[in-house]
Image (spheres, rainbow, N blue to C red):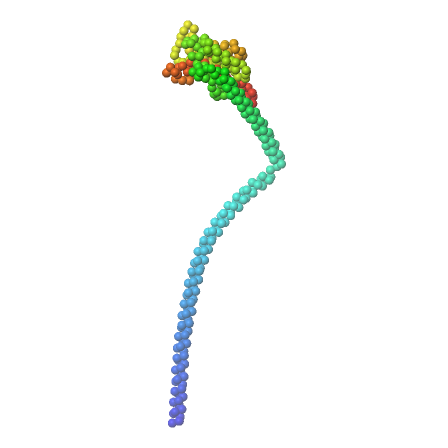
Length: 289
């Protein structure tokens, strides 16, 4: 009986211990499983994170690569430009002293030529200014001398660097005649009194008519009449001490009208004798040459 009880006790205790061992193994397995699952999930998360970072780095690398290539291209262009400029600079440095001396001599010569031309231009400007001043004074003197004559008888005008005294036929001539009337002679005498004080002008006398045809025993046409009238005026100026070498006369007929020949007023303006004062340009021409 004692032996039986002892055996039962041993079996009971051994069974309890074995049961406890089995329970412990199950619990350890569950713990390991949980730990493995957690670690696996963490690994997956790390992998996904690393993949995302890799993609981002790849994209950044592509963008920076493009920027780098662009910068390299710009740098290459700048290097090329620098090399070209440097080549030009080096070539200039190789220029000999003889070439530089020759260039300096050429520049000096050109500077002297420019200075001489500038002096000529200054003289020319002064000569033109002096001539214009003389012409203005002459214009004022003639206007004053002929103040007693109305614009319907004569006009005085500056035009194209010349002075024009235009005397209408009603002041100088009767119709179809080349003989100067008394009032016309008076006007020419007063004009001559001014002209003989300044011999720096040549004097051209031009006769003009209207377009109405004329034919007489003395004058075949308007050419004849205008020529004779110009000559009559020239002779009066010579009689009043105007040097003949300063004078020329010409008949223009009806071919240089200043107004319409279709109306009486226009034809009256066209029948005129013009005394044109032409400045002596010899000094100016010398400067130009």
